[in-house]
Image (tube, rainbow, N blue to C red):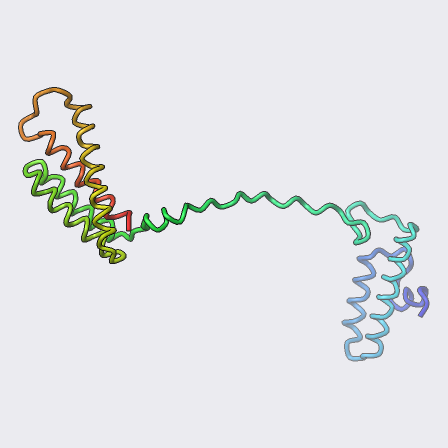
Length: 202
């Protein structure tokens, strides 16, 4: 089938735009949907026109709009966005720090806050109960008793050091204020620290 016959079959001229060619093809295929031979002839004419236009464009006989790109003239692909690498915490830290549920925070928070208040009146008793509670809450997460004991000892030492430093900074060398003794403040801070450790460590 010649190019001229293809244009005539679709009812077009060589000056027709690509949109006109597509519209004519779609219209004729729909009109002749019952006749497979005519439908095939329309498709063949459409393909012949497209191939001829492609050949003419490649030969430079048809001007190509700037917005059209061909596979033989690839444009540079858009630069991929730079992804910042996800920094994951060290494995020893992920094995030590927990992502607690709401209950894992609220129960220890309530118990250790009560023990911190009790420590203002009976520091030794509150500290002993806080140590037992910390071992219990830490042990129930992974059932590693000695690890729980070690973390509790670290918490007690850290809490006592923080308490003593805080007492020295705030109270200094002043006379203790009645029931607010340095021991009571240190025990109270230790109870709160153990409560935080019981919630967020495993």
